[in-house]
Image 1 (cartoon, rainbow, N blue to C red):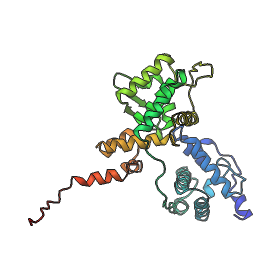
Image 2 (spheres, rainbow, N blue to C red; image 1 turned 30 degrees about the vertical axis):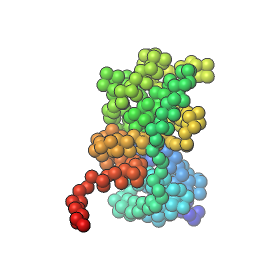
Image 3 (cartoon, rainbow, N blue to C red; image 1 turned 90 degrees about the vertical axis):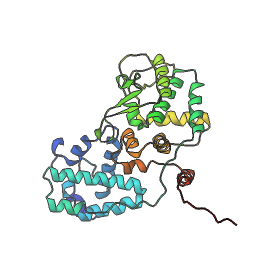
Image 4 (cartoon, helix red, strand yellow; image 1 turned 180 degrees about the vertical axis):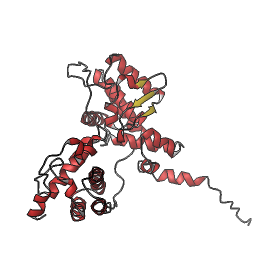
Length: 319
């Protein structure tokens, strides 16, 4: 960007948070999504101003089509398509808030958001874990006699059995676990939506075993544990989930995977067992079945089996 263009994008008079488009947008996100999208907006603001602005000091209402088109091009060159599209989504949403707050007129807003998403040509990210890998992970936990072993087993049972996002898992409180129905009340999921999900009976048993160690005091369901074994009744971070799973994967000899791969495994296994996609969508907390379909990591064998029951009604000639 040219120097005079950069200066024209700097917010000269601070806006109240209730009138700041970026602040209003971020306040409407789930707690787990907020840091990621705030980071995306900071990166976009830095791109537009050669590092002079962040999300709170950029004048978003001053953006026009030439700015957003340039941002799209820059993001397309620097990031994977899925990441670039997530950042462009944040940009669109902030401009929408600027329009709603009457900081942009309808014409400028329509032109500024009139840019296409980045085409995704790469293979789908992530993978599904095999039953043998899940067994090995659980064994790595149950062979650990410490409180960490029992907690980590409960964490894996929840991620695998309910398909939760890691931010949703650490946001669970003791009161959200309902063993009589195998239920979990997920509060403030993606998009700020609440939903009820259910654990397999064996996963409920794992969580109950963890509670026998944790105790029944109100507070987070999953807790940090000091090296000496002291359980702290405070909330774990999503980053802690990643580190725990890496540790257990190493101990179990399981190839690298992400916490989100449990979610992909959850969706794939339910679809493979014949559960309709709308039910899987509701359990996963997806906005649409189309999103759920992107989590399907079933391989070629599933497609091969799917056509085996089709009747061709072919009767070969008798020789």
